Amino acid sequence: MALSSFPRTRESITYLPMQREFQPTVYLLASAYNGTLYLGVTSLMLQRIAQHRDGSFEGFTKRYGVHRLVWFEQHATMEQAILRERQIKKWRRAWKIELIEEGNPGWRDLAVDFGFEPL
Image (cartoon, rainbow, N blue to C red; front, top):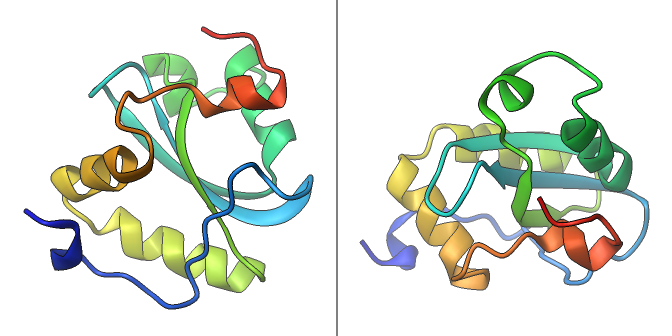
């Protein structure tokens, strides 16, 4: 399925590298290449990645070892980010994989660019 076949919004803006610490961000974590996926939203991306990696809170990512940042998208407001997260949560897995591979075909850990040690 082509990327043009799944829903997009005009408000969706991706910046690489991340522009600043405090910015509403939708992100996808993976356990490994083509592995288990986790979709989240935060305004403090670096802090949230650190929490996922050190297992400081219980839940899905800790249980399934989902720590590799494979995609993120920054937004102007938290409202826009939450709406985008809700939209992507409804997507099929194949669409999420295409979204990741559009900008990160090797499923590289993007958090390494921000100084996090590779997992």
